[in-house]
Each structure stands twice: as structure tokens, then as C-alpha cells.
Length: 142
Image (cartoon, rainbow, N blue to C red):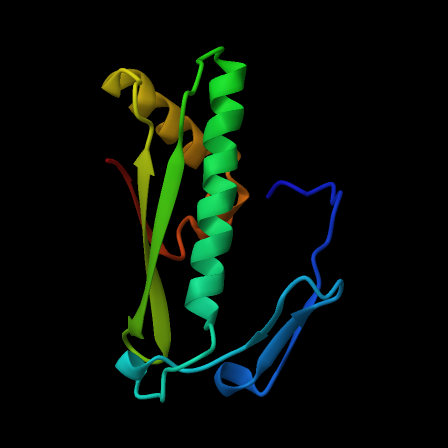
């Protein structure tokens, strides 16, 4: 297993679980949490762990794609990543998540774009490293 030379540590505290509140140590994230109606909760004004994970993974993955593009000297005019994070029961017990990343790299040759996202997913993105073997992650060029 590779060790990590930690350069930055994000810290957040949740209180009250999925019906509570989460706040980062610097106060930039300061959100109420609500269980979505689809999971039997009230929904309403509040985020949830899946939204927060989707936001983090999409931002991180786009950064990884941009890193690979710079390394390969590929000019990106535009890029975006939309993360879809699903949650549901898993066998034999508990819950699991599944992720689909839709990557848009307009103006790039499709083969070049696919190589960028494959390299980002395989070699660079820490979220992809963390989920590999634990979470079903599909990466699609859209």
C-alpha cells in the first residue's frame, strides 16, 4: 500500500447525523442536513452526504483531468464533470453507494478526451483511488 505525504487536511464536524448539521473547521461549509424524500425523510432545505460527496468528487475529478491535460500538453477550452452519487441497500446488510461521472470536454478529439479521463481515473484522482474496489464508479465521456 502506498503511503500518503499529507499536505492538507480538511476537517468537518457533523452533529445529528443525516437530520443534523455539518460545519467545516473554517466555517466555509455550514449546512443543515436532511434525509431526501426518496430515502423516507422529509426532504426540504438541507443537503445530504451524497450531495456533498458528489460535489467533492466532481471538483476533484475535473482537477485531475486538467492536471493530466497540462502534463500531456493538451489545451482544454472547457471542461466539466457531473457526479451522480446513488445510495441504496446492499447485500447482505447495510447501504452502499454507486457513482457515475459524466465528463464533458468540448472541442477535443474523442480519443484524446477519453485518454485524459482514463488517466485521471486510473492514476491521478484521489477520490478514484479511495473508491477503487469499494464503490462502483462509472466514468463516461459525454
